[in-house]
Image (cartoon, rainbow, N blue to C red; front, side):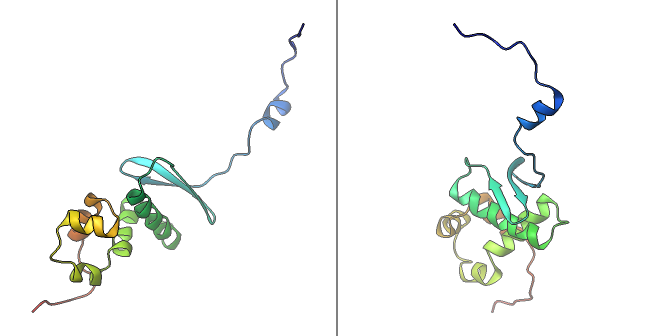
Length: 125
């Protein structure tokens, strides 16, 4: 017959039973925290689609380069990284959905990127 222990752990004993707590920078996408950056490690939500994961990776890269940027700025920076102007120029005839499929990105992300201003002056003749 098993017996139950009646002693409660002391505060020090209870603290030793918890996993280590580490602090990192959250990355939010579409209103949800989907990744945590800590040093060179990134922990991402495993429910992300491959297309969303590409965007989140670019947001993480942006956060490394500009740690003071907020999540909206990171998303815009990711747009310039994943869809550079020369690519948009070459694919200007494609619709948003076609470009999204071609590049493996979410369609709404392509729409956001196409609304962003150009970083270089360029004239089409």
